[in-house]
Amino acid sequence: YCNVLQYFLMPGSGPISCLGPWPKDVGIIALELYFPSQYVDQAELEQLDGVAAGKYTVGLGQARMGFCSDREDINSLCLTVVQRLMERNGLSYDSVGRLEVGTETIIDKSKSVKTVIMQLFEDSGNTDVEGIDTTNACYGGTAALFNAVNWVESSSWDGRYALVVAGDIAVYATGSARPTGGAGAVAMLVGPNAPLAFERGLRGTHMQHAYDFYKPDLMSEYPVVDGKLSIECYLSALDRCYSVYRNKIHAQWQREGSEERFSLDDFGFLVFHSPYCKLVQKSLARLMLNDFLSHPSPNTETGPFTGLDAFRDIKPEETYFDRDVEKAFMKASADLFETKTKASLLISNQNGNMYTPSVYGCLASLIAQQTASQIAGQRIGVFSYGSGFAATLYSLRVTQDHTPGSGLDKLVSSLSDLKVRLDSRQKVSPAVFSENMKLREDTHHLANYVPRGSVEDLFPGTWYLTRVDDKHRREYARRPVDDDLTAAPELVRSSTAPEVQDE
Ligand SMILES: CC(C)(COP(=O)(O)OP(=O)(O)OC[C@H]1O[C@@H](n2cnc3c(N)ncnc32)[C@H](O)[C@@H]1OP(=O)(O)O)[C@@H](O)C(=O)NCCC(=O)NCCS
Image 1 (cartoon, rainbow, N blue to C red):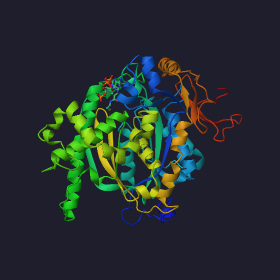
Image 2: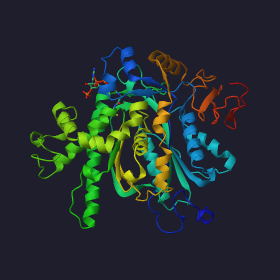
Image 3: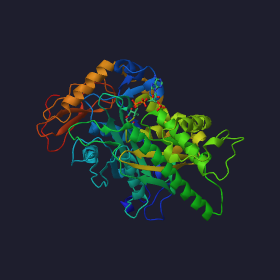
Image 4: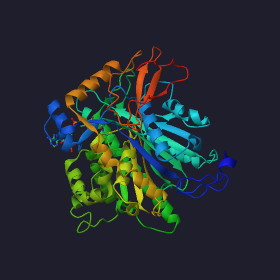
């Protein structure tokens, strides 16, 4: 491929070569999102659950929660988002040399989602595609993305794109965690000369053992959750990752002869893994607390730290649930939240936690609500957290070139219909949502199963499950893109599975 693709033209970039020096500005070139066509209203869910009005909408900061019927599973979500990305960017399946999937929605202990997606590559004849699935709660998408970026920067790279898919169906048993569900998938095209380039050497990671959220029951879609512990693990991981990130950037700056101190101001924008929006707002406040505590002599008379003197000697590890600290730093960081983070919460607020795609949904939400010139040249901090637990804070540098037709311009335009797409979903009652959850519970992992969910209600271009045969082999079809349901659906099946006569 090297020879053939030496002069292959990446979108929005000059010719690239895998024979030359280290590829420049490796990162995200295109980003595609998929979320279900139906949602439940969180205020209505509060009523159904009999909790105080405002608990989900104000307390957690969630307005709507997307969910899938039994027509969709992790394979169909990923097929949908990959095909959408390929079609909308006019890409050929030959141009992809690596495909990575990050998911924690496990429907098979051996067969990867990646191998199911390979069906989309069949017509192209391209089977030379590295990469496989990666799992650790909501962190798998980030691990997959790092694998892809590392591949492009490595000696294994053959000059082609890498494709990263993060997808999940986030569902919880009835109870306090249920309103923090959601579902969706994100696909990202990775290569050199990217409008969102990874900043080299700037990744702060923290990994540790904890049982905060895990899925030991392989017959159930539901996790076992210790909600409070998960919040503590999330916030402690954030503290540690920020500290490592700052140390690394300080070391870089010192090598360049600068003694500047890094602070939140050095991020143009910050996006976080969002289990629910309120935790993200608290997380930004938490980073400000970190800036405050690590500052050798913070000014508490004027400026951002005004009035915070009383908190000078607190120990961060004792403050995860300290109301006074939380309140003071939420107030102090309110402006920063408005300018650097709030826009990133659009999908999270409207669709809920998607697990692995959550943080990339935040990135997409942020980009969708800016012009190319507003984000050009900015540093975007990205915090990814997956229970168990694994976390990284890294940064992307947005390219300076925001001219019409540039890679950045294309990326921004491709996401500009996000709000319209979210608004075009169908609202269903909490009772219907509950019935759907019960149906998923009762039929999850059944062999010889024909899903009952409506195909007409899916967005055009959505892949859906047509049946599971007696050997648990799954077959899928795609709703036509042109919305013409009378046309025969395009069928995809495993080459070993029998033909489907009827749905
Ligand atoms: C997050 C989770 C623990 C919350 O469940 P819970 O313990 O029943 O919820 P709480 O009682 O803490 O209420 C949630 C918030 O709503 C607030 N609230 C409650 N009733 C309210 C009302 N009527 N109006 C406004 N706010 C209200 C609470 O004060 C709380 O806010 P706070 O955390 O700022 O104090 C639960 O949804 C869960 O386990 N989710 C899955 C795991 C998860 O998402 N973890 C996050 C880290 S990965």
